[in-house]
Image (tube, rainbow over all chains, first blue to last red; front, side, top):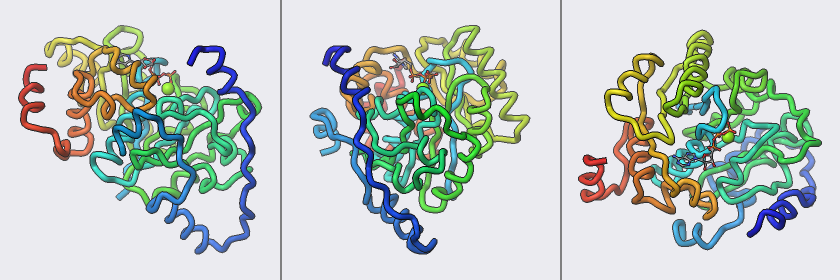
Length: 56
Length: 249
Ligand SMILES: Nc1ncnc2c1ncn2[C@@H]1O[C@H](COP(=O)(O)OP(=O)(O)OP(=O)(O)O)[C@@H](O)[C@H]1O
Ligand SMILES: [Mg+2]
């Protein structure tokens, strides 16, 4: 990728994610955090070809 | 027990982000730990870029501005490492770094390591990050300006009663006598010496940490030894041939 197209891609507006309502009880929030940190229940960064070769 | 480690330097551009990306991915992928790497550069972030991503819908800045919950700003890298990236947009530079400690206390319960890719200098932002950590790894290059800033950072850390886990001498070809001199001058353990090598910059293009995409190159062999120093455990699956080559590095 050349610098111009990189710059265009990197500075393009990011679509805002609709955030979940945070009225969860602290127990529920802890459960959610646990799922994210221990079971990968979160958005993944894009995989690249090199990444796929290394991490499968 | 969670280890909250800040990667600091004083001088800019010495290799903090490179170290954080490689250490984080290695702790997760090779050692099988639960690890979160946080881009603590809220006004000039590039940890995401080193790990193959630079566009995130929710970032640490949103969390520090009270606009989002930390659970919304965590992303999974294919190595298993979790990343909390910072924003790359100027509209977000007003994030309050003083809230960092709260974010970390919240995460700490579930993970083995939290790594903070800290900003250079000893600005308010950096000192807020230092408040949030338990121990530090200081990255430096073997040149006067970087060493002076490293010394100053180490003094600050000690004054704040933060453990200095050690120093990584990066982008360096240094003889053992010089390493000994640096160790004495900085009054801190040396975790390793990483040579200057274009495998490091090429790995950023590949969007995968060099320790994984160019695992057999000199910087990777050196970094594996750093990993052994940091974890106190042998690097997993490092073959006998690689160990023998390592003796001659
Ligand atoms: N051992 C090395 N050999 C060759 N290039 C390296 C090495 N270590 C780091 N670099 C390159 O040096 C540049 C600066 O590294 P990096 O971004 O990690 O520094 P930094 O300390 O995080 O900078 P800043 O203070 O701006 O946050 C990058 O282009 C990186 O790829
Ligand atoms: Mg950096």
